Image 1 (tube, rainbow, N blue to C red):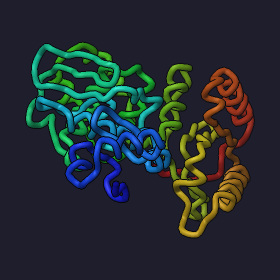
Image 2 (image 1 turned 45 degrees about the vertical axis):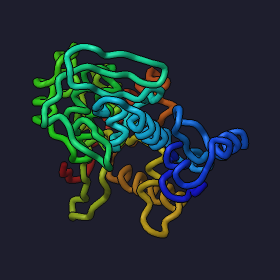
Image 3 (image 1 turned 180 degrees about the vertical axis):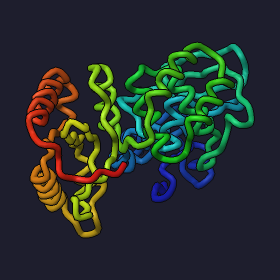
Length: 316
């Protein structure tokens, strides 16, 4: 079996290229291939190198290969195809929508939604029929809890693939419950958010009745020197940064190591402190214990209130 190209291996294609059912059973027994569904497999070595969302897209393709009717990939599955970041997505089922008003069903591996689809609601991504970016976000805002909805809405808006107007129009076209709550979630989304961690932090601040900060603000010295761009800025004199691992890996400059990125970030923080800013960091672990983080943030507000105003110029 030649597994070097497309990791999706369909039984029909394997048989055409000379493999037998015995060969397939032997490969499964040896653990060299893993079953995605009946008649669809993937090399185990390839699967272990994939992110969960990438594995899910393979499951989507395997599901469509056996579909007997026209289905459009939707909801979490569509978000994975579009590449939108999500918070704790349930990827155990392949979500598809069929263009009718009734007849939805669930199995252990799939969830078929029945809902009207217009031409504006459907597109094709890498050969996969999928709900449009706007419709995908609209469907998720209707069905996900507020926090998860804000995370995927932020990610989609930040990618430039959707607009608030487009999502609102897709909501107006879509059928089903949750449109009112979806509009409320959409109003809380912000294209300036650059990660799921930042989105979750903003949701926490909103729920805590803390005045929301400005996002992605550029800071300059009074002489015009660029000091840095910060995740959250409170006018009282506090900078809040979400400290996810991605900051020290994904956004490295060519040739820069994670250790060098950490040192550079520390220098930037020290310089901003020298201009009068109080610095606070939020981590994934602290989001799991919000009261401790919020107490730390409020202490920073108290400290900043007793200090002179920072000596910087800010530009959003």
